[in-house]
Image 1 (cartoon, helix red, strand yellow):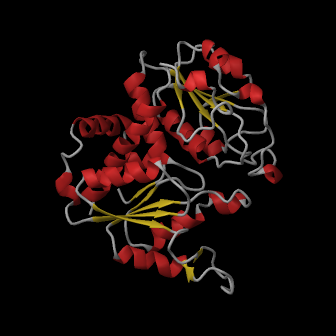
Image 2: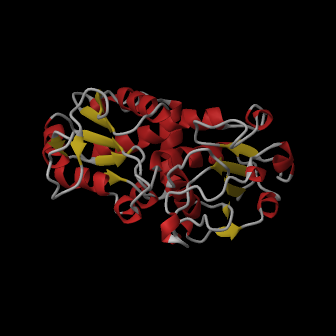
Length: 320
């Protein structure tokens, strides 16, 4: 595996899930693969779970790890071509990327959407430069449009907690005070479409995700109807994707607090489990009583980030 961005990159999901369980049973089984190998993790944005889980996964596999926070201690990097660099950015990615590649064997990149230029974001401009110019296998630690390590961990968690063969999984929009990217819901939708689940997306009108990620999911604008009989509720805010109105891209066009997931919402489900990628704004996305309830599985979900990342890094090491 030379790159990991979308669900197609992982291959058959049954095999990937079996591999995840194998690694969970023995996290250090494949340490030999990473001996004398180095992972470089590059962060253009803040991180807690991604940084910790990815570093832990690489260490479990015997790797050395270099972490570069571009916004703390590095030169400010220009990402666009053709720019006259007479501002505060001292180095261009086109030089920085191949230099980074000289110091490592694998590269993980985290770079959020700017939420101002949809075409630029959805072209994955920053990530694609790493793939093109680093000379190393590259995996996404969340990008402008996707977060596959999170979605893989979500699928692992659903497999562990499901009580029926084909559970009903609902991705629900929830209000937020800031404009957030669509990366997490995009990837979650992509992975759920590939999995054997009954998948429903619910959100206010105008918040439709890009069709390439919606896939075969049912879109239901009535949140209560969507929740009925659900086995898993995945709450997440996203800013307007600009699908129905490009001028709305990246904007907050609804703050409807009736979409906040509370006890009443969860009562509509089939004793459903509550999921969220974290960090979560309490009493905005979800109420205290729901996220602290026995049916909240946000912590095991976060713990599985180490496992999903271990599978990805293992497969990349096997191709070196």
